[in-house]
Image (tube, rainbow, N blue to C red; front, side, top):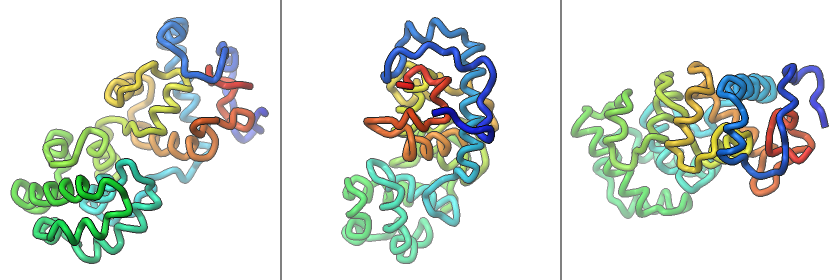
Length: 244
């Protein structure tokens, strides 16, 4: 199914070879020039922006500390579940120093439904203590400082920098971004850091933050795991994994 006029499919990008519904491999990527892949990547972003004009972070937060807590809790858990848990957590522990002094058992009880609650509680308490001891209770706004916090890796740091501070230091790679990047032939990698490294030169820097939200929305609605809805996908003419 082709999209209507409003989706604005690009000219000349529909001739990408499509063999099957699996991500393209390294050989397939070598057949596409870097310039062609970059042009296709930017067309993908443009179409998804039109399709999902309200794409944004789905975690609920009011300040960088709340987003940091919510992002740590979102590991191996849906954002919807996290959003059900955080209001009680933030009411009980509104600031880093409040959470830093919390009893682990109390935090575990609140976050239990997000899964891996003991490890997440350990990360939350460690992160909060580090904020108090190293940063006077203020969430830092640099990649270097963020990744030194307990429970904070590059993905979480990218979420904070892009959404809480408006800084485009990198691209968030979660399960949706990894899946769509492979299916769309933007990378053959499966490691999150390597996927990010492949995406960065393909995507214009102002779009680094929104890219994850666009891929998440499209991944949830259309490019699902395990079976994508290629027949209604607005990218099916420029996706090498499309079954159409």
